[in-house]
Amino acid sequence: MPVNINEVGTGDVNGPGSSTDNALVRWDGATGRYIQDSNGLLNDTGEATFQTTTDSQSAFTIKNANGNNIFVLETLNFDQAVTTPNVLKIEPNGFNGIPGSTSFIRGMRYRAELNSGTQSNAFRGFDTLLRAGGTLNATGDNSFRASNAGIAWNSTGTCESMIGMQNFLACGGGGGVDTGTITEAIANKALIGFNTNNSGAFTDGYCFWAGPNRVDATHTITNFYGLYIDDCDITGVTNAFAIKTGTGLVDFGDDVDVDGDVDVTGHVTGKKVGVYAYLNTPASTTITVAATYYPINGTFTNAPIEGFSAATVVTPGIKYDEALTQYFEIDWHASVYCDHNTTTVHFGIKKNGTLLPGSVMGSMCKNASQVYAISGTTVVELATDDEIQLVVTSDGSGDVITMEHYTTTITEFFD
Image (cartoon, rainbow, N blue to C red; front, side, top):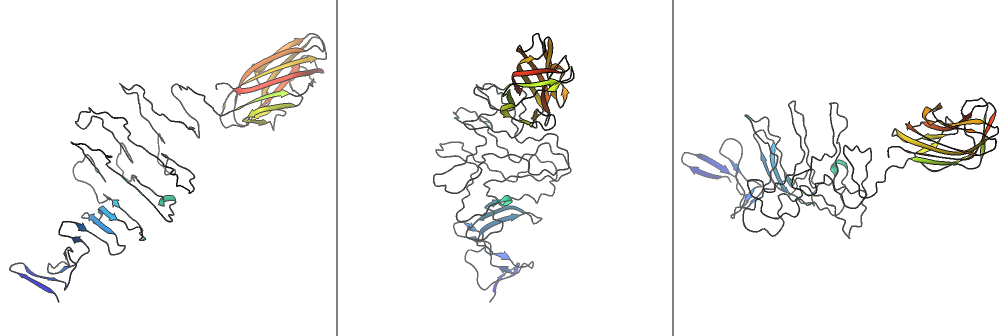
């Protein structure tokens, strides 16, 4: 039976035959005459409860005039299957343009102040804890995230700076005077705790991950920095470190470009590239045509060898396998004798079949079968698949040049 409330000058208001205790009254329709029950509760102490009818969540939502959510607050029941759970969600997507000028549009802002008294425990403006039991399948975009910040820029205007997250510490700022003692000032601290009761599989742990989210952009990007650290040479600071690490390896997956000096107190272990080769047993090379360079015969042992392998085009020889084009120093030492008196012998290095002019060294072997020592050094730039060959010649056709001993090293020139 409807309840009729008659008041002079205001008309009749019709309500349901029963209602929920402490429920907020809502209009039913637009006539101004009918009221209805609601899921929103307001008790005698001023506590408000809002609950949806679909998933037993306490929910509180504020919308703007366009019907867009600008504030959503939910208390989740993790026993429920919820498609898009939000403990606290702020959606300022109802802004369709703000008249006049404004300094900031903030999707969310927290401010906590301690102006007097003593705070013994932690002082936290934002504190988030996610805990999952049972079976959680969190993969890809459905990953487990305590904090997620992103920007979608679809405007045709100009954006001077786009910052997904900014942390700022003001020591003595905000109009105050810093007279206290600060042991550590950390704008961003990331920790991963491996507890003793962790018996699950943990493949990779990243305290900080930075990188491009999409690589299919068609616009022009002048500079992209996975990590950028501004100048840290602050006046009054004893030691200003842009980056300082504790124990553990620092692994760079690509080239490291350094504009200034690198000050190292320990050892720097870089990519090992080079060859040491030696002739196993004496070997002879016949100079069929005088002043023509021929490969040095014999069997060489190449050990150690890093970044090089056996040549496949200019044989016998050594091939450079690395991707980085760089300069190498080639040193060689030979003990040699000839089968003729007064024979002038020259040794050299060929790159891809062409003699390097700066590599040639020679000596006259005055007496036949007498051993003479000859050494040489050259510097050559090598790119991937370039091949190096050791060669020898003499001033007489048919001369037989015997290498009693031969050693050579190929090392990075600027390392």
